[in-house]
Length: 157
Image (cartoon, rainbow, N blue to C red; front, side, top):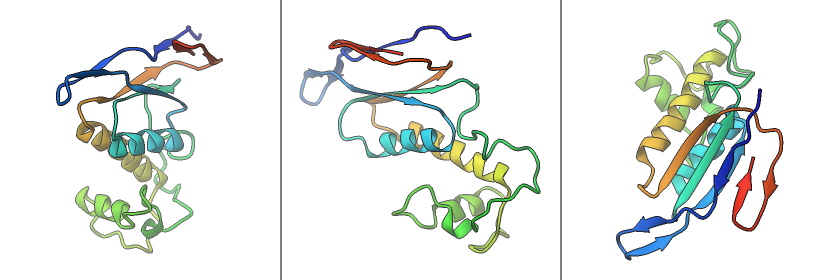
């Protein structure tokens, strides 16, 4: 069952460097699977201004979605590991993550289990969240978005 969720766009964040109140820009991302999680990770990694990111996913676990939520290890990616980086400017990001997380045998040509890639997406989002600037926040909302209404002062989901 869905409930109404209201994300306020007008909450000021204090910028101690300039001693100004700057309202964060609010992003609502509906769906916390692969796409939603990596949009959030990229926003967190690349923010140059105050941001409030609302990641709305009806399941309590983000980063997997249907594609990477399988528990069966024989369900493999249909693209080799060397071409599955989350970031186009870091082509070995996925391979490096694999090697640092107990999968040293994996090469760029290996087709890894989808479940492992889901672990990678989750870890990538977590790392981006931990390393985000202080004025950039991610809020995970376990709920189902059924409508979006925009007004001049807030967005209602």
